[in-house]
Amino acid sequence: MATIFSKIIAGEIPSYKIAENEYCYAFLDINPLAVGHTLVVPKAEVDNIFDLDAALYKELFGFAQNIGVALGQVVDCKKVGMAVIGLEVPHAHIHLVPINGIFDIDFKKPKLKLTPEEFEAIQKKIIERLG
Image (cartoon, rainbow, N blue to C red; front, side, top):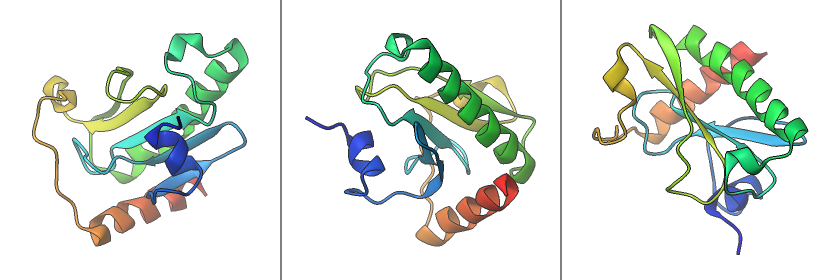
């Protein structure tokens, strides 16, 4: 059975897509910890990130690096934090979260409620920065 991320990649579930290539897909988290919180996933449906083959693992982290750099340039933050937890969806993924302190990436925190217009505005800024 396809994961929710596979359905997003296939276009069966809408997303605020940031970028994609042959192997990876990045989109805004709809329950973000911060404005710009982005998920980066391999298109291959693999549960554990350490089960990715070496080439795809490198591709995924390189792809995430490009997104993270752009995100840090358009969101007012000290850094873009990265987390790989992988318990909530059985599909490897990287969280990129703009942070100003260590507790900004605490997943127990209440999630932001953004309007579609707010999602679209940050999506546009990140995409433009990626050029």
